[in-house]
View (cartoon, rainbow, N blue to C red):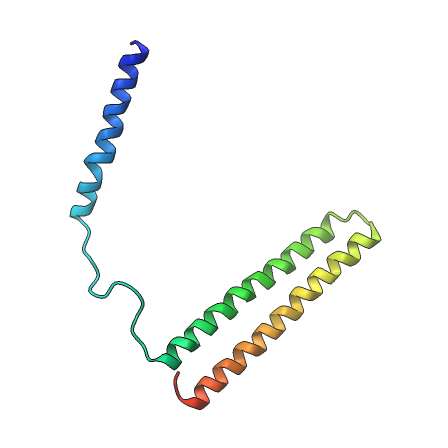
Length: 116
């Protein structure tokens, strides 16, 4: 088989996948009744946004703990690197504590207001 014939055959197969298969897949798709975010009042939406941001920042703080542990492992006994790794781990732990307290305060305030 020549290179040109191989290229033509390949382009036909790609055209089949790109042209026909999405239509077949779309035939089985049903649209949801309400696409998008759920409709809520402003305080509940604000509480959801703050909670989501705090949880994402908590994941970042957890990443700092993991990164500090990795730095500690690869320090190979070098004191300045070990101290830097310990500071990274300590910062991550303090971050998680602060984020947990902030999350508790946000939930307490919104429950006191009566929105969630």
